[in-house]
Structure formats: structure tokens, C-alpha cells
Image 1 (cartoon, rainbow, N blue to C red):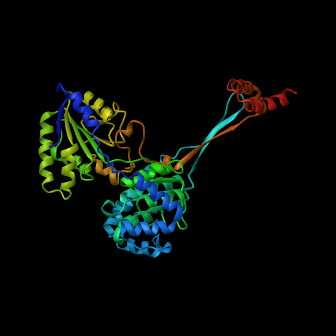
Image 2: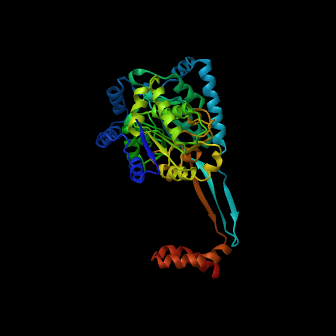
Image 3: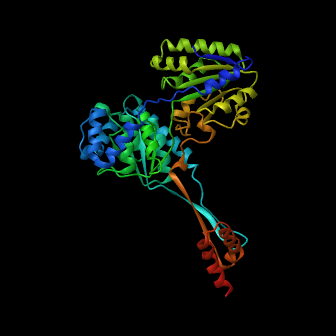
Length: 433
């Protein structure tokens, strides 16, 4: 059974605070092991990748077979049914159209001193996309990571996708092809992150690494950050649904389970103004768990981390939502836009009862790589901006330097940085000479 809370309970604040601090992230002691793997890949390159892939994925490779050949990708794509291909192509089209609108514009202007100022945007040169393998092999994640990189204009995009026991998900390779990725390495784990960050004889180093993974992948991304950029350290999935009484309990139940089925550590929370709806949703979840294919995983998540919170009104719901700062937020209320305007912190919002979160996972258009573990308070989901850099531009004229240079010289002197001041003074003296 999930937790049941009400804002009218005397112990509500203590229980809600405890709910926010439940430790859901997998935290095995992996850092030492990851450090050793990274050091090994840095020292031995391809040889280390090959040995580690044989050890962890039970797959024997050579430098020539680390990446799928074009023929292998072609053959895998041919295995995809017409129906699956059509769905994936529609998703790719919608995701590309959405992210194209995110592209920022260069700016340049001349201020009142005559100085020209501005900025320009440009893509990173190379990006590496990590895609989990095995049971957690999701073609949708390929599209969500690769398409923003392609829209941003990244010239060199490669992908790593482990294939334990040599098993390949054809949809993953088709998603790569639809996204414009031609190089897909069949490697995974911390060793794949190390290869992307430092390079090997076969794998070229990249500038940015994105994509989800297990605890070893997360630890490796932490360790290589600074050498390369990363998107985020993603934790277990989470969903918050805010619902009023005018809802189908079964709809809310399956929405909650849509995240619970990801991981035993996932979290699903319902906040509602109607106690009767809360009880009905709990009953509907129990009924669905009797037949759900991933009921063991979803049931553990709902039992250990699920919650139903009863509030007096939607104002209380909004305030609690901001404290939770959920990855996914469904607003199943009559006026979702008005409620959304009062909520500041969420990775993605889904407005109205006809917008299940699963639409965002696959085909809505916005990205499904989102901040978890309350990090939506200070970060955003993956976007084109993750693959772009902003370079500022400035050009002084003699007149503009004469106007603002003395202040720069003064500030340099106040910081005891003599050469800074002299670099301005030398030019000012020429102008005054």
C-alpha cells in the first residue's frame, strides 16, 4: 500500500518532509570500481574495452567489430515492421519539429559609446550518446538524445549501445539511422563513458556525453565531467499527478503505474482535493497490478515509494508540487493552464486529463530526458541548448575605448592587477598623444 497523507493531519509536515527525502537512488559502492575501469580504458584503449565487454556483456569483439557495420545496421532496420517504423518516423518528425524551434539567434548591436557587442551560438564538435542495452533498451531515448544534437548542428554524433550476449534491438538501430547517426558502438557501462571521454584507438573522444544509464554509468559521468560536458545525472523515474474529483480513477491509476513500471525505485504520487478519488485510485492501482506485465516492479515501486496526498484546495496542491519539483507533472484539473501558472518547478508538465505523460515519453515532441530527484528546482530537460555553446563578442573603437577605458583601468588598479590596467592605458596614451 502507498502512503496516505492529508494536509489536515497534525503530523503532515513531518511525513511530507520524510517523503521528499526517501532515498530512491541506487547507491552501491561502485565509485572505486568505476575509477579503475576509467583508468584501464585510458591506459589500454581498445584492449581494455574488448576485455571489459567480454566480461560484462559476454560478447567477444575486435577493434574492427566494436562498431556495427553499415550492413549490420541495414539488416537490423529491415527487421522492423512497417507499423513500428511508421510510429518511430512520426515520433522523429514531431521531436525534430519541436526542437528546431529551440534554436537561439545570434545577436549584435552597437551601444551609445560606439562599441559593438553581442554573441554567437555554435554547436559542440562531437557528441556521444549513451543508450542502455538489455531490458532497458529504448529507441525513444535514441531519438530524444540524437535529434537535439543533430538540430544543433553537431557534426560528429556517435552512439554507444551495449548488446549483452550479442542481442540487438533493431528499433534502436533504426532510431539511430532516422536520427542521422552512422556510428554505433556495441559497448556499454563505465567503459563506454571512459572511451567517449578520453578516446581509444578506435573510439574518438567527444565533447559532450548524454544519455541515461545504471549506477556505473552515472558514476562514470560524474568522474569524466570537466574533461567533457554531460547532460545530467538521472535518477529513478517519477511522476506527480494533481487531480480534482472530475476524473476517471483508472486513468489516473495507469498514469501512476506508467512510471512505477520503470524501476522498483521509481516514485508515483497523487495529490487530490477529493478523498473519494484518492481511495478509488488506490483501488484501481491494486486492480491493475493483478494483470500488469511488469507488476512485480511496479508493485514494489508503489508499495515503497508511492503516495496519495489529500489537500484542501489546488493552491495547496501547487505549493506541494513546487516542493516536490517532479520530473513529470500531470495536471488533471478543469483549468490546467491556470494551475500551471502557479507552479514553478517541474521537468515537464502535461496539461489536462487527455494528456497522459506517456505521450511525452514517445511522440508529443518535447524531450523526455528530464531532471529527477527534485533537481527541476534548478535544471531543465535535455534540449538543443545542451549541444550549443555561446561565444560573446566585443569590438571597441577608439571613441568607445576612450569612453569606458578609464573605468576599466581604475577597476584593474583596485584589484592590484597592474598589467590589466597597463593594457588599457597603453591604448589610451596613444589616443591622447
